[in-house]
Image (cartoon, rainbow, N blue to C red; front, side, top):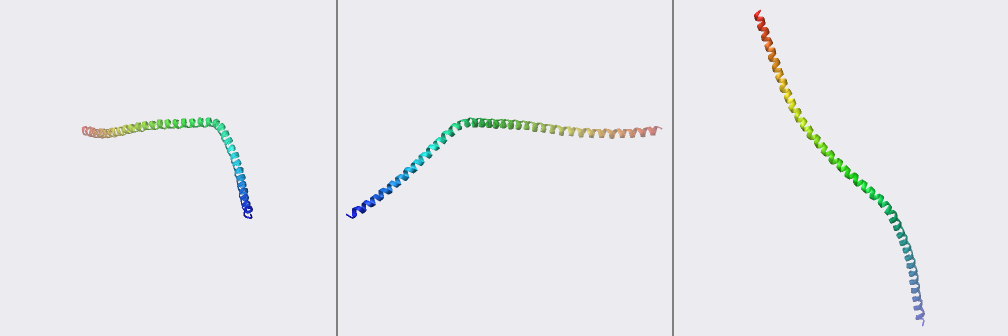
Length: 132
């Protein structure tokens, strides 16, 4: 009979331990449920305020997208304008080279004309001196 009371005591101790573990788990579960409810409440608040801020954010995103599109258009227009200016600059440069060549030719013609005029003048003076 001594054996049964000791077994009972062991079983009572196990039962006590199981009850304590069960109480601990129940307390943890209650704590987790409370945290879950708080999290749900926070999510609902964020969803409510999020929908308001969502509109603001969507407007901000749309504004930024429009600015990007505008910047791209401006860049394309600027690039096109730059290419046109470069093309015009090449044309003008070509014209200037042609004008410079023409001016050099005219300068050479002028020098030859002046030289011939001086030679004729010298010849005339020589003839005039010879006639005297």
